Length: 291
Image (cartoon, rainbow, N blue to C red; front, side):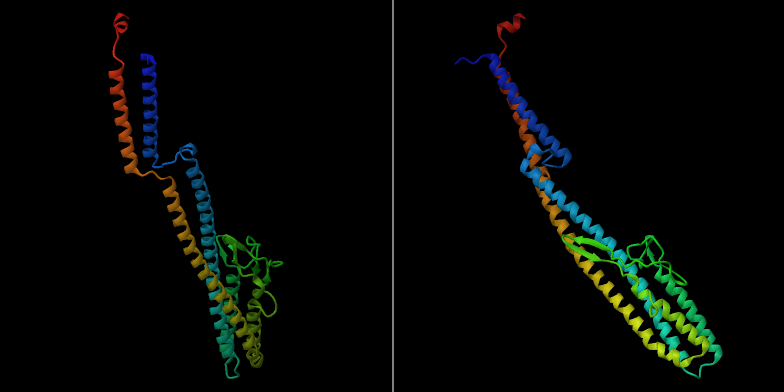
């Protein structure tokens, strides 16, 4: 079969076009740093990279939830610890006032300090984090307490956060311990009134209730601290998972620069070789000179 000059020219152009396209692909990989820049580059790899990115985005969402939850719990823990300190002081004052030997001037000073503690407890009961009230149930945008007691109907709804696949955590302490006749906010005014009245026996009888409320606060502090510790462990696991997924994504789609540069050099050499071969095969003919 006779091979014409036109056929050789077409084959040469086809070869040059193929080499040029591969060289452009390698240049794109060098520019982007990615081995896969479009699905057609590696359909299987592109699908895997998509699934890995989805997993990374999910982990990052959990990381954010864990961080927000921990910040909320840390703010809650601090408010509870200050309430515990306040109630310890209430117990000390009540114990001092529970004896008939205390002079009237001292009783007046104790009553005034108890009033200041009550104001501080109300302030702590209205503690907020980022503009959201910690002890307001799910109704976090409405201040739950006034100096006279609950500002309205208290909300006891739990705030849940998703901190991992199939894992949720309740992050709020609902305000039951701040409501009712034996609550923290109700006890201190009672003690203050009894101190003012000089009812030593009644003040002494309140010591058990004061200790019970203090113990309840301490249980909430322990519960909150345990959740913070759990979130720290979850955060560590999520960080490790994110690192692993990121590494797998890099292995899947990142370009290996040394190999890409070598391949690009080979394609450039192939291109130059094809040009040289073409120049020898397609020699000028008499017709070319007659044009």
